[in-house]
Image 1: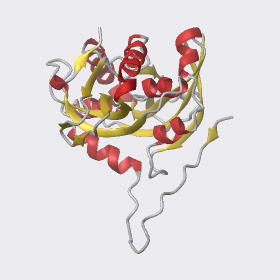
Image 2: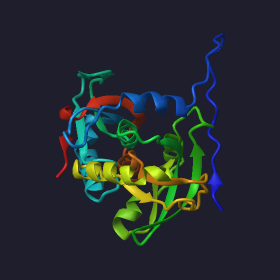
Image 3: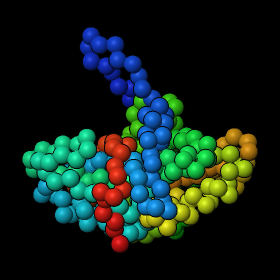
Length: 261
């Protein structure tokens, strides 16, 4: 049985009438701004921003690189913003640096630019057994949450990404989007080009009119499960290292990022 987590509803400051902004609205805005062209390997991608102490920087970067090399991240890219400096909309403090990594919404943005009407649906925890994705065990829908579902689930510390890396069995952060089944050929072409460009973050593509790792989808559609971009962060947390992450935080030019080989 899938356990659906209900995230806490944020409260506006006293005396202010702050409108609620659901995750799906923010995701849609970012998707439309993604301009990444995987063939040219240029353009803007959606990125997550992780803040860490300068003293932990070396260890955290080693973990990020290891997770990226095992294929449990969205893309093979990262960028470090040095302490006390600014980059795009991010300003760091003394003694603290920021590591930018690709967000899976980049995949949706590229699909959208290719004419695929992609619809992000939910974030969740996927159970892995001997390297094979089995099912979603926990989910939060984008339309029902004002907080990023992956951020909520990561804070619950119910994933076991380190176990997956070491043994092939455990659970990871992932998310689901659906597209019309008639777009499958175009989807496969886009995913192939993304993979060639270092974005090998797709975990599972379903057959038409079938459940997606235990999640039913509407008729005449297929589901695409992408690895959560914050799985490297989850491993850092599992090692007990303090880290503060803002998923879907920035749009970053891919040319500004470094590729892990």
